[in-house]
Amino acid sequence: MDKFTGETSAPERERLLRRWSANELDGMVATSAFGLGVDKSDVRTILHATLPDSLDRYYQEVGRAGRDGRAGAALLLHTAADHAQARDLAFPRLISDEKGYERWSMLIDHAKRHATAPDVSWIDLALLPAHLRMRSDASRDWNVRALTLMARARLIELVALAAHDVKGDEAPLSLGAATHAAIRVVDDGHRDPEVFNGRMARARQDVRQAAERGLAAMQAVAAGDVEISEALRKMYASSQGAWVPVTVCCGGCPDHWSDRGERIRYRPPLAPRLPRFARRSLEMLDRLALPLAAPHLLVIDVPPDAAYVDTCGALVKSLVPAIECHTIAIERNFARLHAKTIERALPLGRSAGVFIDTIDANMPERWVAGAGEVRIVIWGDARPPVVPDILRLSEAHLEILVIPSDLPHPHHPARCFIDTTPHVHATALLQLMTP
Image 1 (cartoon, rainbow, N blue to C red):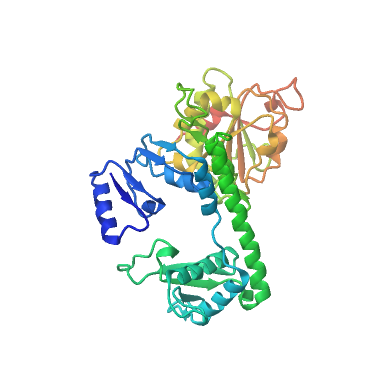
Image 2 (cartoon, one colour):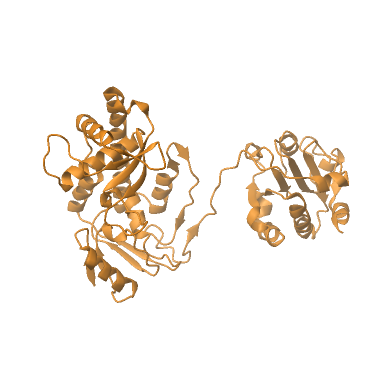
């Protein structure tokens, strides 16, 4: 065992990292500084002897275990005193408006223009305000705090970092290790105290609110009030005002540990539908002069016998390369039983480029296709309420609806859908497409 902290000297760090990489150490007692630039795939256990200041930090730190794809364990040990310490760490020291404007004016007045990018300037992080005479790490840290908050306020953009003691083209890992920062001004009002103070005040409030949310989430997980995968989903599902699809996956937290039979709880990830797709050529289908149910809708009927699934697979195998299909959408009940068969029917080399989707017969509002999309919709025996109406009005370049021959008409239950709709029989189409 050995230890690694922010105060560990550079030579000692190199020695420790060599021993760690060579498996000469069974464990490392370390602060979060140990994670920067350290990539060891076979770490099996992460033991926290304190409470991290945010759920995001905790997630990053436990993520250092099991990077080789094998199981890892994370243990969290904390006391009441750790909660107070976490709160102190969660809320960073933020520079005030007056001091921030003073330091920014000093830094930008002494900035040097980038040699090749005229809109980028290099800032010396060691510069001192006029009232100080001696350089110190504390003064440099306040310069860093000013720039960091300005970037958060969208007054500037941090473009690059540099340090005197780095080798070659290697860049410092963080602002804390940098001696210079390249910035780009993104708000022309940065010299106006009123604009500067207003932007910085809003950014300061955002930082504090984010810190409060992160700490509260960590405390809720530590107390067992919220299952960790659900807490992570809530945290990462919203990013900068946009919703992001996040999959809940649990490999054995205290909430689920009693269910030993189900080792991993995993639901396939959601993905937002694309609003627009690349154009595809339908020249091959155009040459066949097939009867269309609507300008962008081709209906294919398949006999509802034991070979229905195999015939659907044969259609996928022939149609996907011919029309460069974007999406295969499968009715949900049919997908539960036969989605794997349909996926296996995809020609080699095509599966990675085709999105497999599922649609619910009772949720037609989610069937909407993207502009220019080429989509094959495979239906089972579910009775759709308005399938034809949705697909006839689709913005897709082409919708191909594959249905059982006896699928009831949504508006005329006593009749089959194909009785009143132009269509092509699956067998006939496969014969036409066979060389």
